[in-house]
Length: 241
Ligand code: TMP
Image 1 (cartoon, rainbow, N blue to C red):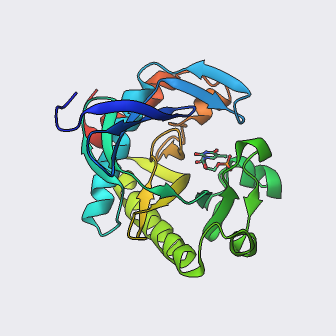
Image 2 (tube, rainbow, N blue to C red):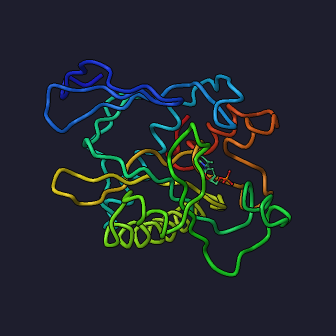
Image 3 (tube, rainbow, N blue to C red):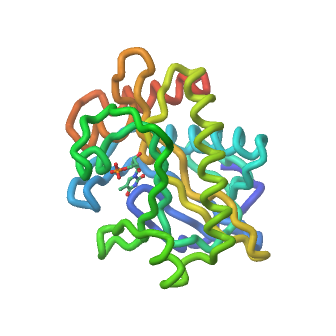
């Protein structure tokens, strides 16, 4: 643990992360957990080492994106499982970007998983566990005031840009980016930044050669080798175990 920011009281604990106040205004510490859930909490377990993989992989990708002009909440990595981030007001949307049909899209449209999409699909879900994170569109978002028109335009543009940058970067590591989920937040001055995490918990990563799943679907679908898959993603991206 770095002495740069003093960790104060916990302000939030979710399924996979805890968030702490710090002694610095506008800075929070995120701590990643090994706890795993799927199906909106219906399935629970522990993936040994997941907290560290998700922390390190997220930070690696956030730094890459910052360097390519995508504003993020990332400040600095503090330890294997802890990171300092800028405090933001989270926009209550899960933004899902899809390159290849899988998961709920494949189920909804009756497509075999792995079906190539002619163009990138963007979906929004309203972040509300009690409602099961329902899918919504631009009209719902405007009607409910979850994001302004200009904010949503920024969110969509940034999401496509993230897809381009990550897709190329992962391909170099032998990983195909099937789909992923992003969350955005507002800084005090109103600027939209990328927040939350980008990890095997929130993306579908398939081995580019074999198609082997290297993400949370191994846990969701009881495929085994969950810890090894998470480690493998970290090894390929950061070159470390
Ligand atoms: P889906 O196919 O189940 O809708 O998931 C699409 C992508 O979004 C997949 O990469 C997993 C990610 N995701 C999350 O990170 N959190 C969620 O709550 C859901 C439903 C999906």
